[in-house]
Every structure is written in C-alpha cells, then in structure tokens.
Amino acid sequence: MIVTMTVSEDRLNRYTFQPGELKPVTDRNQLNAAYDRTGVRPADDEEQAWIAEQWRLRYDTDPDLSTFALSDEYRRLKAQGKL
Image 1 (cartoon, rainbow, N blue to C red):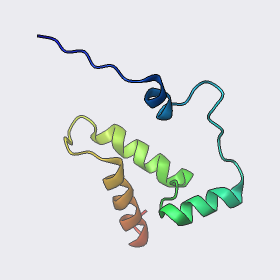
Image 2 (tube, helix red, strand yellow):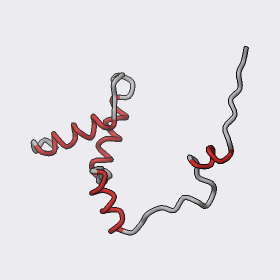
Image 3 (cartoon, rainbow, N blue to C red):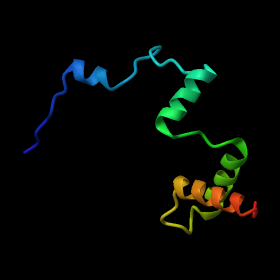
C-alpha cells in the first residue's frame, strides 16, 4: 500500500526561496558580523585551491574524504610551515 503525504503550501514556501527572493549579502560589515556570530569563515583562495586539488587527488582512494578534514589538514600544515 502506498501512502502519499501532502504538504501545505504555507509550510512548503516557508523553507524554500522563490525566484528573486534570495538577496546575497555583500556588505562587508554584515558579513563580518555573521562570521563572528557563527564562528565560520570562508576559506581564502589559497586554502580553497589546496582543498580542491587534494580532493581531486584523493577522491578515488579515500572513502572518508571530507572538505572539513581537508581544511583542518591545510591549517595544521600551514601552521607547521609545511605549505
């Protein structure tokens, strides 16, 4: 027996963006406030390039590959002066 579930339009729209509704934040002060509030900052270009290259190299051989782990590894190696 197949049971179908209906979702009210109100609930559906609460968790999705409609075209034109998403407004990117570009104000540097707002971005810094969000970074401070969440503790999350985007990787700089050098770190992102390293992560992308490591992902490409390890994708087929590392089943536990994670961008979070690669970011941690990059920061550790950078702090040790190995990068």
